[in-house]
Image: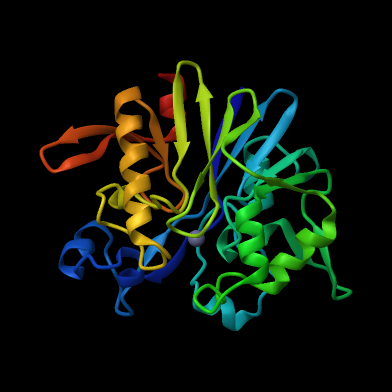
Length: 281
Ligand SMILES: [Zn+2]
């Protein structure tokens, strides 16, 4: 198995929304904000090469919305989707599988892009798309609370593709790649857990978007069911601490990967580094 990480882009989001009930006096020490109260997030995708497959995890925003939409996201820096993938050694045609953690616009939008003729085309023409059935049905029906995140132009191309594989429950996608479902952020958030050598790497996605979201009460205001998020984090953190697992962060602009350590205040980030540091170790 080979696995690598790249950052599609950085973007900005309201710091208060990112940290829910945590006072700014506390979160701003972890994530400095600008004059508009926004903080920087990264948007990292994972690529796993195993068992004859090239598996991409999440695909970023894409390009199907207008300039006004992206003006609020302040996209900057990063490697891009196709060029980031190329830096890892793969072309879009190489990708056999895309794991979509959930249908929020910053995670799924990049799978399909606009064509000059007005339609959309698949960026990964040979890929199947894996997402949880619960998330797919939830996003397809949408709701007032998430209507800014579940965009029709992102959902339609997946249903038209005929390549959707809807996952019903926790299980193995292929040897070494487990898929695990969560319900606090949005129903059926699906995060991969990868076994590499004798360690497991948990792609923390929107369950714990940054290292600052490891403490149990530090959660995004976007979460639909905060008490469920807390319980899900507690369970996975205790298990990860016990088994010496590592976390991979999609949205932490500083930290790609960390171990965990037990402190008097609870489980916190331990040793931090780039994914590649941990793969050599
Ligand atoms: Zn999300």
